[in-house]
Amino acid sequence: MNRRKFLGTTLSAAALTVLGRFGAQADEAAEKRINLPKTNTAEKKMQMIYRPLGKTGKSVSVIALGIEGFRYKSAQQTKEMIDFAFENGINFIDVCLSDPVLLNNLKHAIANRRDQFVIQGHIGTIWENGQYRRSRDLQASKAAYARMLDAFGGRTDVGMIHYVDDENDFDRLFGAGIIDYAMQLKNDGKIGAIGISTHSPLIGRKAVESGIIDVIMFSANLGYDLNPEKNEIQYDKDRLDFYELCARKNIAIDVMKPYGGGNLLNADISPFGKAFTPVQALHYVLTRPGVAAAMVGCQNIDQIAQALAWCTASPEQKDYAREFHEINAKSWIGHCLYCGHCAPCPQNINIADVNKYLNLALAQTEIPLTVKDHYRLLKHHAGECIRCGVCEMRCPFRVSVREKMQQAVKVFGY
Ligand code: SF4
Ligand code: SF4
Image 1 (cartoon, helix red, strand yellow):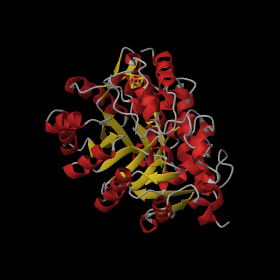
Image 2 (cartoon, helix red, strand yellow; image 1 turned 45 degrees about the horizontal axis):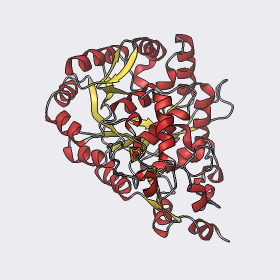
Image 3 (cartoon, helix red, strand yellow; image 1 turned 180 degrees about the horizontal axis):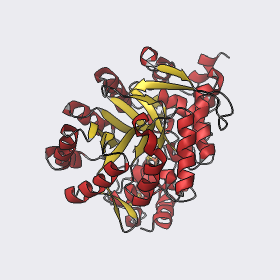
Image 4 (tube, helix red, strand yellow; image 1 turned 135 degrees about the horizontal axis):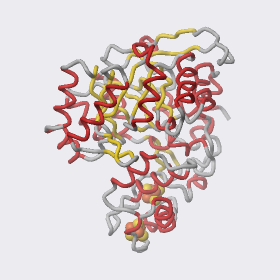
């Protein structure tokens, strides 16, 4: 059986066409490949690829770093991780926490080469009683961002309005307050471009249409983009349209959760029932239209190296589609694919989101602060489940939703 034929057994023709269409680099003409000198930390000579960050005038490494995993690291450990990343060509860093200790460690790790990094700092994330919080309080957000600016020489390259998934929140934010603050920062030269982070393609679309946003941080991976329908896997059309819109308008996407929070790397919790390698997962997101870079959350140097392996991987190593071999409807049973067919819940619980945050929490030894807070921000929580079971009757994948709700209560506490 040839490759196309075996893929066709599990992927719908439309999904296959879409995957194939973006199988090559999204925009090779715009990319720069730079051979980096061999260093004592890099085992082999790396070849980093840089892409333009939309219209911002910045050029960013396709493998980029999210810093949530830098929490609890000492100043020395932080410096070693940043040094390793930098020596291997990583120049793009997303800073979503305004933890003063972490910012101070980053400040010293980056200090003498600030201009060689592109820093994306989040507006609307605050640090309160030793905890991360999303905030819409303008004064608190300003105070937190002042710390961010101080850590990075008085400016960030992208001021990223933090975590907007709800239309009302979007309308409020873009009406006044935080958006005015972001525009003022841009006018004052304290941020280079304005971005927004979201998990929703519909919010992403609104952001593009606003004409204010140049960069969108978007959660993307195979698990979020592909929906199972009966025995086939379909590409989520809203998400595909969003990628294509960004590519057309030259709005840069940088991807969060390229590994699905770790789920895709673990066969037990992967929605596909199979583990992908970091290289495969990264290759998928880096070949979506409009994507400039993948923000990889790394806890240590080994994990940075695993992501960097994408730069030197062979086409066979990057080929994520071969993992679909032998996936059949049976392997979806019991795995939540966040399709939403179980809605509506009489308690208005967003079951898909609860399951998503639960899986993100279960994939890590310690629940990431952002996941904890995203769960907190849900309007209704698993603890409100009355165990009526109507969701389970609607779920095409026979997910034991009631058990999942109980598990979520155990994990998050409510
Ligand atoms: S519980 Fe079932 S129906 Fe609901 S989002 Fe998950 S897979 Fe879809
Ligand atoms: S069992 Fe719980 S989650 Fe499912 S529909 Fe009923 S209340 Fe909602």
